[in-house]
Image 1: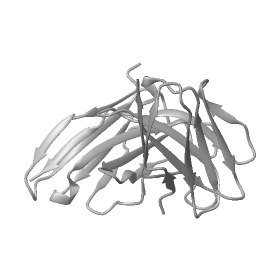
Image 2: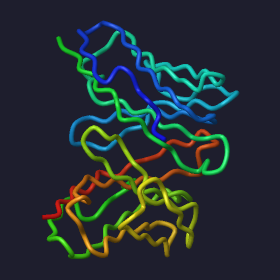
Image 3: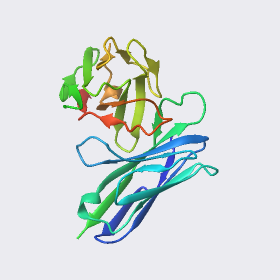
Length: 112
Length: 115
């Protein structure tokens, strides 16, 4: 079952902040975040593991609430280059832990 | 390093035709994946492989077959294409699975249209 992302879309002015949420109904071991620009491949941003530290991007941070099976991606002081669709991918705790299940994405548009 | 490459970039098929999509990676990754991306649906896993000679079904495997005869290559086959298989197909690879700090590296995608 796909994780649920919110919001579906958001428009920001340069310099504003945004939060993108990812929620799963399954117990999670890991959460990945990717950004995809139009017509391009998804690009890695961040990984969060259960009980571990995050690994990722200098200007983007994220949190992982293991008890609630939720993750949030924080984009601060947004730049035009932040525009794109953001996907979370969740890795389950039990069987089938080799694969990620991606959400439907959050489209972020940053305008001057 | 080329990373992950996909062949072809575009293809148009008629219903019932067959084709094979090729994915190659030069990072010595163990894990490889095939996804399809449809508007508003995100990325959905078709099949994946955890090593040379192994394959497993993902979320939407029906109508597709895969093979991983060499570690660096992962092939996706459509035996009898249907209009519902019109999509953008992405291949990805990772060093190991999801229980580690291992990001997936994606290829540029193949845009397939089935008429």
